[in-house]
Image (cartoon, rainbow, N blue to C red; front, side):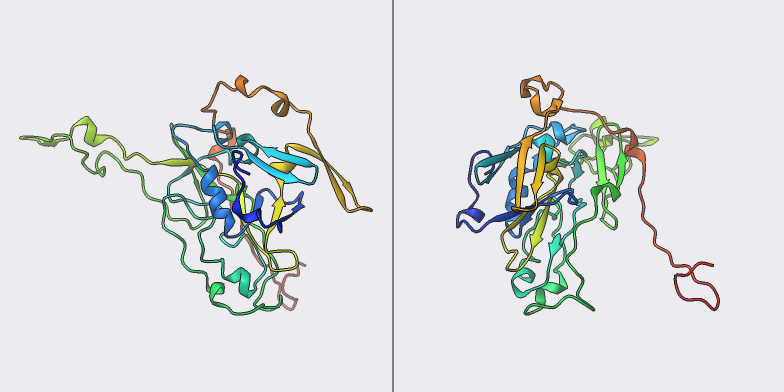
Length: 293
């Protein structure tokens, strides 16, 4: 449920979930992930820390226990500018006729207000394809920390590798916005309104990823990753295949929401750092590829 409203995706009673300590996101079965992302996304305004946003509450109903998540648990910290996404378009995907059919549907990985991604070639494949050569095993999205982050005085932009980024407007390139222009012998003088930089919309986005798994695991499988595990202490009963949940005893969980007075937040100290990944192969003459002498 989101803000107390039950989602249609689980009304038939076939939804299941797994707890994954190695997943930084909440996994939502596609194509329902797009609806969930839309319900949780909010305009960032001048906010610098989206975990402080006023956004809906998530309720995950388990047998005999309800897991609740607040914006501090599921929101990305940094706002994303309009048209930018840092999520994996495929999410967790095992190719099959059923899962491939969801690849071109709206997704939680789509940028807000931007162009939809190009059609995925796998969406045209027919039938279940075995894993192996030309068919990669299930994949999970890379951690958001690998995205490059650029900060300005009042806005933060998170840029995924290869994502199109519009150049910020300047006094010389900003489009006129209705102000008057006076001509003098020295040339044209723009008014203050015309010289202002173009306003860039930014959004607070949840940490979601699409899950595309065929039967018997899917198709309606939720992956409960860090957004749940950072809020709840979990105990695993391997013998009886059970997982126990208890609200963690930390300041964030026990504080009264009314105590949160700062809804803007601050940028992290490392916001101006650029994290990059580089892959290289080393060979030596007469040796095998990848060997180092």
